[in-house]
Image 1 (cartoon, rainbow, N blue to C red):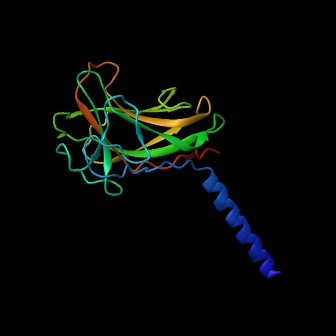
Image 2: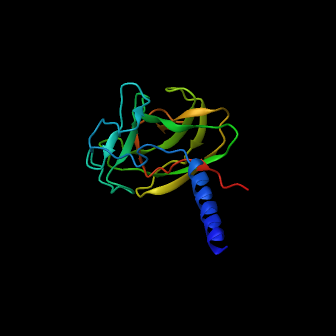
Image 3: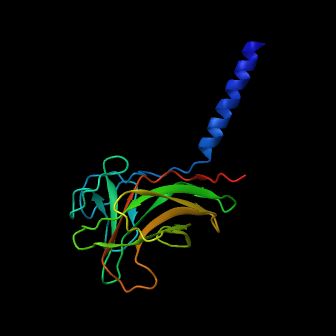
Length: 195
């Protein structure tokens, strides 16, 4: 009888572990690892801004902040002509419009990014089509701190979505300027912890 009970308990634990894993939507290269270089995409991500790519840091453009996770992170910039950098990826599974989701991302700013030294905001979008920004799910406060801080994102998709886009953003009220924002240590996407 004791063996049957132990087997039952192990089966229940295994089932709950598998079901909690199935609730996660995996982010490929969530720490933005890659060969440290300027104008380079981290693997698993694609550029969402025509004619411009992010930088994999530290070590270029005078940016030497240590990574929060792994060996590298991404820097996105905006320019005085109004252009900006953004990256995206196809998610491992579609986001359902019947669920609440959450994830986190670490953000920082460099006051020495080769002239792109002003703080920015971060916008995060989801979409059911590559290259489109359909639903804004997050806009950060101005990121003007020189150390890493974790920001939590919680959202409900308006429709089924397969893509996520992360973009550097100036503000709706300001004229374009040169700025930067640093990204690292994004978590996988999971269901919200709502009752």
